[in-house]
Amino acid sequence: MIETTTPKTQAEAQSPESPGAAIELTGVAHSFGDLEALAGVELNVAPGEVVAIVGASGCGKSTLLELIAGLAEPSTGSIAVGGERDAAARLDACAWMPQRDLLLPWRLAVDNAALGLRLAGIGRAEARERAGGMLERLGVGEFARSHPRQLSGGMRQRVAFARTLLTGKPVLLLDEPLAALDAITRAELQELLVETLAAERRTTVLVTHDVEEAFFVADRVLLLSPRPGRVVWSAASPVDRSEPRASAVTAPAFAAVREAALEALAEGRG
Amino acid sequence: MSARQPSLIARWLPPLLLVALLLGLWELAAQTGWIADALSLRDYLVPAPSEIATTLWDNRSLLAENAWVTLREVLLGFAVALVAGVLIAVLLHLSPLMRRASYPFIVASQAIPIVVIAPVLVVWFGFGIGPKVAIVALICFFPIVVNTLDGLGTADEEQRKLMRSLGASRGRTLTLLEAPTALPYLLSGAKIAVAVAVIGAVFGEWSGADAGLGYLIRLDDGNLEVARVFASTVILAAMAVTLFALLALVERRLAWWGAGSPGGGR
Image 1 (cartoon, rainbow over the protein chains, first blue to last red):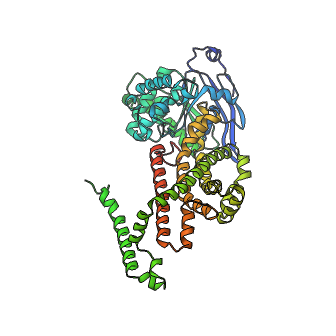
Image 2 (cartoon, each protein chain N blue to C red):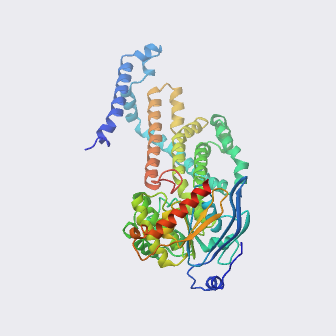
Image 3 (cartoon, helix red, strand yellow):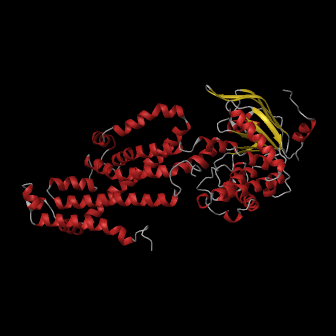
């Protein structure tokens, strides 16, 4: 495979106004002991692009995100975020959101959202104000002073998303953020995700096992093969984001690309 | 309203009735001399509950004085164990090497029979409050260290990764994630500790003391003041129950989120 580093990517990465940093994975393989999780993953994500990764459970999607996030180094291959290759720099550049909300039960929703800000050394008052504003924006402003156990799954996920966005990092890594929610809440949060990502223009990698969600939220959808995972199929999303969700997911083009993806998924399994 | 939450009366009535019944039987058996006859004892060696109550009241200032001595030993010993226990638990949590090296000794500290070590401590530290505090601390130390250490290790791997991703240092992960996670564990260890602390104080006093309920019990035992032995015992039990209840209250107020890995619930 030929590596393509566009001049635009370089320029964007250096600019302080950059909406997002480019992600480049070259020949990334990762094993846990004898277990081969990933084999030869090639992936380029442009600054500001939203990419979804779909695949069967256990194909190494979560591992891939953790590697990009700088939480571990791949066994072989290289990962660069904004041109930086070492794990510490990737940790600095990426906001990672795991599937479980991991809210701290003893902290108020607003203080959970503000966790990253506080850890970045921002004072309590300012962190709370900014977190309160973000919760407002994500539709849970009135629950800022609630404890996590008083919130529903969807609200908790919104708080966790606020915590992720508030880090202000140029790359968002979302690991099945909506997997545990009921269908209605899920559709609601997919719309919120689309809206927010469009406004933020940050480079985003969304991991999901829901093909429809992938095409609805992302600009481009990649398919990861079963273990050991590697990218076996990809397609651009035909979704017109100015349309409401209901009409977007029922358009013929959407149905066609969804069909193709499901077929590719089935093939990979067989 | 609903039958799910029984009223205060419904909740407390059964145990109160049971206690009243048992006390009544005891009273009856003692008054009529059944127990004494069955054990071939003289009647005054088997006091009835009413007699113990009278003794409690008649000796109130003597009992209060000695109870205060014992309570001080318990509280001081418990405080020493709490501070030392938490500090050592944090240290062992941060250093796996130290944990591996010293854990056997911590377990061994619990295996030392207090009855054996108590007289030795009296020889070392004299008849004052020192050896009693040491014994209470020794007894309390173990459940506090072990529970706190378990609690500090409870936050799961993903939770730690999130902290790391949010830019938390080792120290911040300890204070923001691990310490609050450990708090319910610490308090439940402290409850166990405080319940046995009273026994430790009594052992300490038996090995050499000039005041305290344990000392008084030993004295009264020798003088066949059986009713007062029971009276002292009632106070010791009440002390343990009260301290336990106080800690349970602190637990509900301070660590209401309970045990488990935070954010792990669904």
